[in-house]
Image (cartoon, rainbow over all chains, first blue to last red; front, top):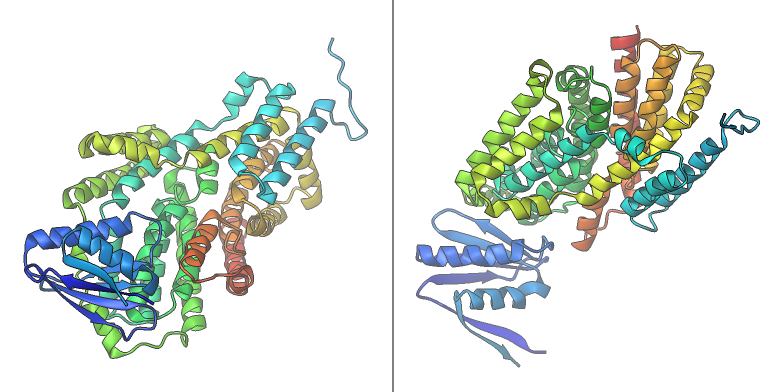
Length: 95
Length: 436
């Protein structure tokens, strides 16, 4: 089965992933500038505007850190949104 | 002279037709095969087409205070909801209790209960459910106990004020002497007791359900709730107008302005302050299906009132209870509670209001305990089953969609006994305060 791979936009964000959860994947974001925070808020608005509440959950932490818990079935959609708002600069399917 | 044909029970032909239309409509509403608003409006139309009531009479029976109050509050809540203030309060509270799940159950329940006292129950749960998912996911625990607790508390909290639940809005609008302040002084004390008892029982029921670690609790403590506020200025405007509107409700009997005027004025002043860009979306978020459901029901019940059916049922009820206030109150309380656990309490209350008014005309002079019995029974009864109130179905629907199934039976085992306890407490309260 194909897997998705991404390359973060390291000029603005550092993304760490934690795959130990049973109910999805946890991503932690360390954002480097306010413009990128605004873009991450756009991503958040995009997911919170729909009526599905548990696909992608956003949390704001201290020190410009953010956390997302994403359900496995919504992982690719989240990455596509991060790509759309340029927090991820490359996205590809690999074997 | 017009010849009026009566059957053996002394009812006119028009009354028989009105009863048939009413029962048919009621049956279709309960069956939930077709949307309740369509059925209620068509039932209302039949009352006019069959000349049971004229269009003018039908319009006179529509309680525009109920309609205006609902629209005003819906507009205000739709704007306030967009500011993120509910998420802020929920996360702030979760942090205040150090992320302990059982304490979070308590605070989320209380926020829902208090919110529902001033906002529509469905709106309150719609605002609370997403943040509940958010917090429980972070704690790695099931959201179901929290959601069930929020259902129960939304219906209980809604009973506390005149604007908290549609039955209270209808009762308060139909009986001018039952002002906003009188709802507070008569219902809020008992609702606070029921809230405390229910929350304690829920904490007892769910005390062993939650297993979390220090690590997960730390996650809650590291959240920054301030970021949940999406528009600070709009939040200030919304909360100010909401506060002023509630003050207006308290003062409405002294300033001689009806509650609908207060709510609509508050809503449109908020729209003036927030800017025209919110006008379309705020009016779009008004639940017009609910509004037209009310319109249909008022006309439907007018058919029974105008043909004397309500008067007949009221006299039967008085015969049954011997005209005693105590037995009449308890009959209304339990009948309302059991009926509201299985059917929509809005049509039930729409039917009961003229019935109680008629009981007053037929000799029961102290109607006050009857009104509070109707309110407590109809609002709290909704907790009995998953289909008892709109908020229950909304939460169950949202939870099911997210993969957390709240079944009818699972809910029944928690909701029905807690509903019975709340009605027993209400019964004791009504007896001690009004009938002793």
